[in-house]
Length: 340
Ligand code: NAD
Ligand code: UDP
Image (cartoon, rainbow, N blue to C red; front, top):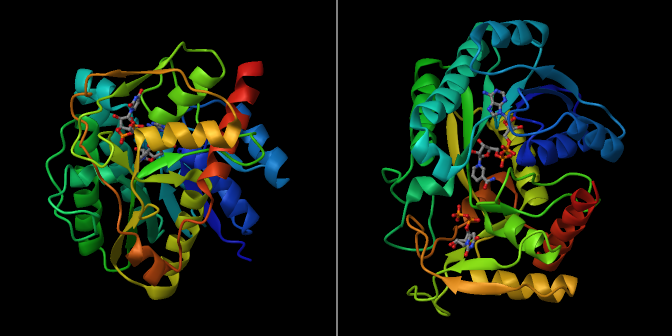
């Protein structure tokens, strides 16, 4: 058990809340920095119900350097930072690029600056498989070349990785782990925390659960003519609780190894098509999904999945939640939020 303090920016959000639960269950003291731009304060109550411990909370906008400085001043005894705070809607980023560059990059720069000022040496960063674009060979390994992103959101991840690399190179005491997430899905098995999409979901899984509960009439399946075994797009869907655990493994490794910088794919190592996801959801929950095949969505790569061997070898982490359990948790969460 550890009683180290960890700053979790964006800790009220989807992945941050699950990671806070995992950290608290592992004995860490968590302080969340979040402006609640895409989350609600009730998440703090839910985390408390699950873990029996209320995380500390600073309602701050990470783009506000004075607020970030004040918060670091109160929590300068932290061992590390897990930096989730970012805007993440790909389509919105195309319409509002400056909002995305400002929010995602200024937040990161402020956090790095204050880490340096307060001698906090360890950062885990939420990167994304989007940095690979459409790889020439699959699965994507950490050595697969990164590509210029097709959206400002994706571009913020490429730029953030560079900013972190350069900062670590210039500060010998600083350590970083870049986690490239594949497609996070699911919810806590209690159904108390999960993904809270604003408006019409962009992502597959919340769309499926909203169709399942009757909130939406049918799912649009984007394209059935891809060069994949069944013609549907292929992704690597990672359970959000497994993803949360990867952050703890990354923190431990960073502190124990003293490595300057490491990058890990966080996925299952298995590609599944949109149709396989629909069928698995139906089997696991007993609920039929009404769908229709539509045109491809611009910007979607036909297939991508992770080589997850490096995380297994170096971090001792691998995905373990059966997909049926992930589906049932997502469905339980959807039923809970539909009630309110
Ligand atoms: P989310 O929107 O649920 O959580 C992000 C949290 O950050 C929210 O609580 C939001 O209020 C907060 N936030 C945003 N801007 C902020 C700011 N300026 N100051 C303070 N708080 C701020 O998103 P998520 O799905 O939990 O994603 C977490 C991280 O993982 C993000 O960096 C995202 O880009 C990355 N990521 C997500 C996915 C995915 O599919 N969910 C995939 C790859 C990478
Ligand atoms: N998808 C779909 N219908 C939807 C949303 C997504 O068919 O309403 C497909 C999409 O084409 C992709 C997969 O589901 O192949 C995952 O999409 P998502 O937006 O969840 O994640 P992405 O891989 O784009 O980050």
